[in-house]
Image (cartoon, rainbow, N blue to C red; front, side, top):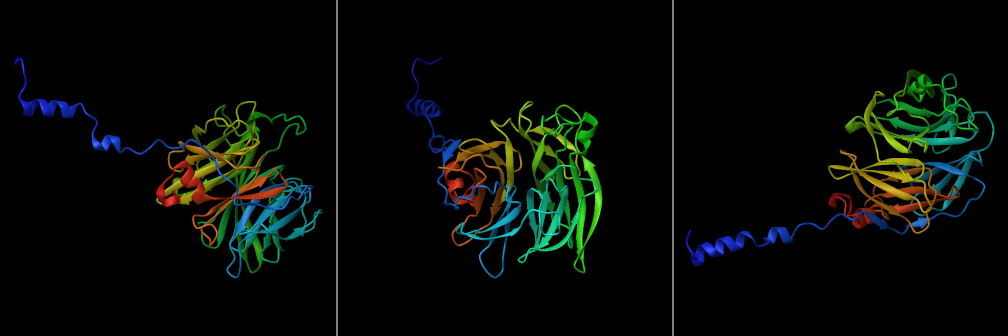
Length: 355
């Protein structure tokens, strides 16, 4: 071997050991946690005990943000741009248009679906007047909570309703393991000539140790990925979101355990894919963000005040929120709004989502 190198060869070998310009230009590591101020928080409505949220996109005015109020046993309506309260509908009772502890709510077109825990039914109302159209589930549901609507079929929806009945509700004693196969009920719902046509499609739920839905409430779906995320709030085994297919099969995966109850969950579609956002019911609430396709963690954020969140909802672009908005309940008494563009920027998410 030669005792010295030619200048050209020495320069080549030296360059191989130096950091390249490409290496120096690599993207910074993604931010894992962020503090994001709320765009607004609505007035405090103590005594209502709000639970779930849904957005109705109007063609003749500002969108409505609708909240179910368990204690008030009615529905509260807010201006989705400003958070100003517009009105209330319902009240306690079993008659059509009145409620017995309303929980999960969802909108399809101009129809509002309302789950009643103590009424063991789902009511359907027509917006904007909240006129009763019909009800279903009385024969199958026992202690229903959450709701998600598959709207891909023209003229009909498939309603997924979580049913968290217990052997002993007060002491949180679970039913027999085989009864966990009845945790989610499915219905095909259509409106014909102003009346509901409903067909019960059956129930599902895994009975194995890993996939069992012990204490269920929130549920949300992703049609493109054939996926349901279902919240299991039983912290005795680790509160989490479990992945099921749209036809009710456990997919062998649950998200990392939440610190508190896994509550509201919503799909944020942006760019070519998007993200899931799920509420970890802490003070302040920790909103956990996951990649839409892989479910890999993509970060988390908290607001300045928002705490103990139950329900969440999401709306697309508007004048005030050009990249969309996340709505979240605050302490059961108010609603908070987060600009999704700020979430994308702070967590360094996909540029198409607002970063």
